Image 1 (cartoon, rainbow, N blue to C red):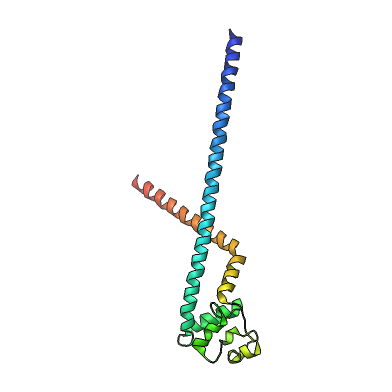
Image 2: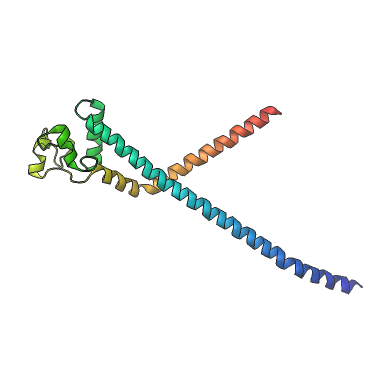
Length: 174
């Protein structure tokens, strides 16, 4: 009698084992697919946000470009951007002609800086030919991993803050 119970148990266990393993396999597969979907959405959102941010930066620089001579802050911003990124103008150096006239560029566009070097920079070939939009895009590409890590930490911090505020709210109700 006991032998038949043991054999029935093993028979029952064998039939149970396959579906349980299959269930666990599909659970893990579903979890993996959900994780891959979340990662895909995260990276797509990061790319969208980065391109949107670069567009906003370009628009802000265009506005500051038009105020280069009349607004000290706009002029300082442009000088800093062009010196640091070794670029000239948002899309190209010729944009400055309409604001500065006489085929002039700001002194910060000069590769070899000197006072009033921008007035003769084109004739002397002493200017950065790279557009600042391209320079900023290249900077973002080179530092993309750091930007992604920063965004990830900000998202985690926001979610943690949300969780703790909900937890605090529910604990204060008790």
